[in-house]
Length: 216
Image (tube, one colour):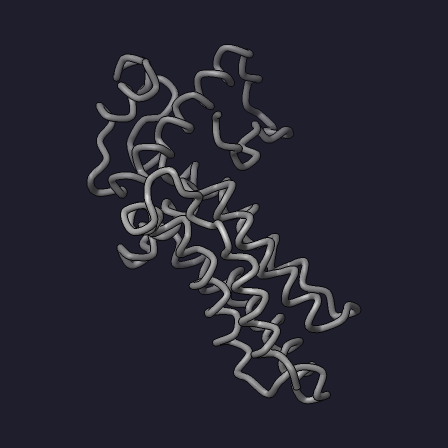
């Protein structure tokens, strides 16, 4: 079964640019999907245009008709990914029950690891290289969102609605304990077996862990 993908649909409203044909739109999507496989496996430095073209079933000249460089493909993937990557944290709602909201955030992150492992590894590979193509996003959009939600978590802790824990490290721990299942899936498969779902039992364990951790 083909794994679900993030919504990499063409965006409307490109003023001044000619509309793409259905074939052009399809081929761009084929290239991006192939590139996601290659980049998530080999990283940016290890990936080549020849590998992407072969994975896409296109010639290299045909690929270069749609994207003029490896960097252009990689940037396109990252740009589209980042529109979705923040959504689970954005949904943390100040009006909800604190423990229920945090648990729901953890589940959303775990679900993303289940559904979008290639995208998670693409993100992780970029970070491991020092985030050269994402630094501005991390220092602005991501940092602002984390600061906002950390203030909310701190307010809940101050009101004794959750335990008095560092809000930033709580967020970091959720990232670590959920994205691990995507980023280190080969390691988990080697330990538990290739036919074993890497996330089997993870949600129950994390619910138990955070339930005990968050009790005020």
